[in-house]
Image 1 (tube, one colour):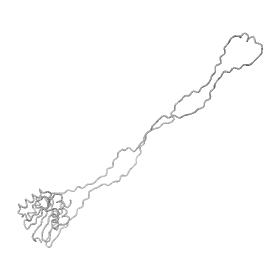
Image 2 (image 1 turned 30 degrees about the horizontal axis):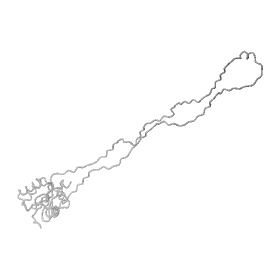
Image 3 (image 1 turned 90 degrees about the horizontal axis):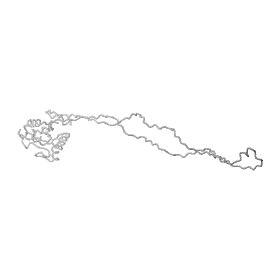
Image 4 (image 1 turned 180 degrees about the horizontal axis):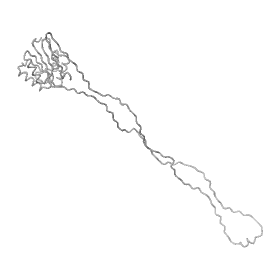
Length: 257
């Protein structure tokens, strides 16, 4: 069991450099080296990771505080544990001077006090998405019209007239007339034959017109999607009262983070 007058201070520093400066100030203030324990992979007097977690759990801190300190160690931070019998105020002042913020302060059964801290202030960005619906033109299809010339066989009937020369001889026996006698001389008579033939002509007519164009219609489309936003919850950590001694609880930026 620890000495009843022992006070335990626990602080988290983000880097080895910050922890080293605090260690130097603690030693300058007269805090003995045997009262100081440093947790972190590259710090002097360092415990192994599993030993560091065991040490933190042995401080009787709430599980939430232990998790904060453990996460700080995983991120390369350093935890300084000071078990002081005197000069407690000097140690606390050194932690505060190095801008460490308390996340909790309470007494153990041995009247030991634990303070877990982190340097600086934290900021939680509150994000909210907005749905923006726009329009763009895309090709959805179309038509392509071709024209070509085709030949189709057709038939028509036409009546054609033909002429042929004919010669008929009739046997007669009568006296010659004076007119016939006077015209008795050589003569030539021509009879021309005529015939009709089919004449083909073609004429073109426009029988139909194909109009190619576009028509526009409008429609309403309902867009369904999801948007995200940040919701921040703040838990108040109650203080702890020990017999005949009232202690206080601080909630700083680290718990908000």
